[in-house]
Length: 479
Image (cartoon, rainbow, N blue to C red):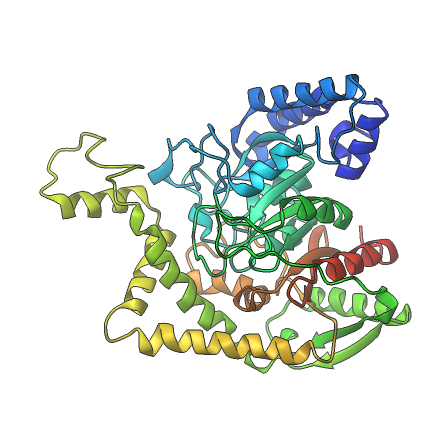
């Protein structure tokens, strides 16, 4: 096995036994990035000097016989909307093309404290707005399983980097499925934690009531390792919560809910076949399965595309060409008439089409005369969706669904049709609206294209989800 194929757990064991060094492990990943990044375009920035200096520090600890954390010396990639002090953080947008992060995100600070090795910053849909990683201002990322197809979005760069063994694990962000959907498309594991379980401090805000940082890994065990490090209350984020994990019960004691609304017309028959085969296999292992109903599921997509753009509109107002980021004034453009003209031209030239579309939708929904008709009504629907889950979780312990209605689609296939693109997230949006934890686990393939199974749990039941995920990995072989 090559160094870059190791999981976190495997690499840690070899580091402790001194079978490998962190420096050599890091060099192996950097060579891999140099060989493959031109083909897949997973990384926007490669932080070689930072990575090698971090690796050397861990090797020095090991050589002195000191105990190291399980993440120490393990190379990772970080989505380029999560701040790493002293490194570029562009959010894949022209408006932040030269922005250098002045501080670490809390999640980054925590992994640095454990001795992790940061290889670089990964590509994404601009400001995390998209489902394919085609909306990046710097170019589209390709799926390592089939380079003619998208890796999913918006954390497509992180998922592609893990799938192509260009890092051991990665951090992404999930607003409506942006960790789980690319994990599904690329055949890796992606965990969206409970809202508030991981600090959002240092994550560039897209939709503040929905965004959540989470891990993308090769195995469920690795996802658990990373989650335990990055989770917890943060005084710098008032939405983060001091929580006690729900103790995981044996998988044999769990009741699994299958929502009938998630097996709808329009789902690829092969995807449905894979998910139903997984459910049958679970039944054969004496896992209790029960059909449930989440009746307001059909309104989740519409609700999301009111709430999310409204928050986008508010959060992206700061990018005005004055304080930081791209500015027509700093570009020494002639002909700016007044301050308003600076705002308009800086945003028009610095922000991409999808970002501008969502800002306009959100501004409209929040405007006088429309707030109650759209935003307020969407928030009421959001409450109903949350109540559906609360009612369901009185009967069942976990809920299983597909991650996406289809496997990875062709690059360019949906980019000109935003409504069709938005439907890619139809199965992942509801857990975000309800603030619930959910994970994507590889469940099979359509041809060579991976298909993920989504497991949704009660708030702060990550232990149960991860325990079930490890059971699924062990007992249901898919690749």
